[in-house]
Image (tube, rainbow, N blue to C red; front, side, top):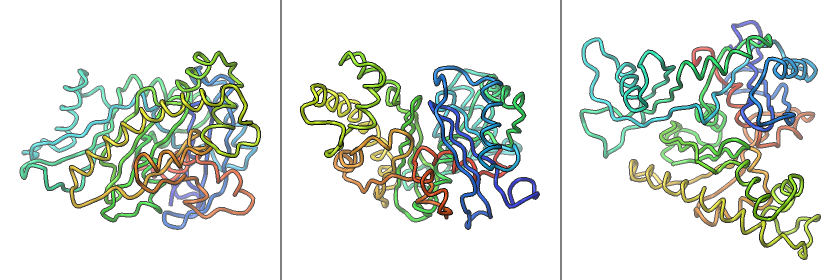
Length: 356
């Protein structure tokens, strides 16, 4: 039971790393979760660092929206996370796999070994791995980064029980649609400040990276600069027009339609090139497996018509993944639960205290 055994409510999963704040809480237990509360709203200044004042406002929203307690699970911003795939030699004597990984990450990123928060897990065995090595995935962040990120949460009266990596939370949320079979399944979280790719095999994250310049902020800025658009018109081009064929408010004779869609197509071609490279790597590592499913998450997943060019380019079944697709939802929450922007918060809510 989550939440120190005091109720059947989960931790509150809160994602405040982008343009919006999203929060999810569940009721029940792993394997039979039911959505208890969910909310999403735009930040007043998405470019500003989170402050104690803003987080106190978040606390007020959670109280008004029916969330229980103030124990939360949050993720590190993707751009502060160090993710590595390592082939480690056998642990010897008192030197553990965790210690070997810590030393290798510190060497690669040129920081002190004791200055890192670290999470390590072994990957499914690959036929291409050396017999005397262990392949592991590592999530790490520098203490200075994690402490700076955590400080305002404590000041706002929110107890951070779990500090998670976005890929781990995404994989946890998607468990009902990935399972533990041999398929290679990928997910792309497209948000204002990050475009985060996660590749899973046998239910385990085997590859993860933040795709540079794939985030919505860069695309929005490109639309404004190249087409001389105001911010609200760029928003319209993104979230009302997109690649949709029947956007009611986007007449075919809108002068910027063709140019806007060309910019979107170029942006996502860059992103999908990175996705294809990652899927190719995963298939090389696990030649008996094939990429079978691709999931779109985050605010960018709501761009009209995006699924079709993604599925066509990757030649893989593509679907949005929202909380309503992943956990039981009461009728009153089905509307907000259909938003794929809340899926990361859903995975955070499913974290347990031993993952902190």
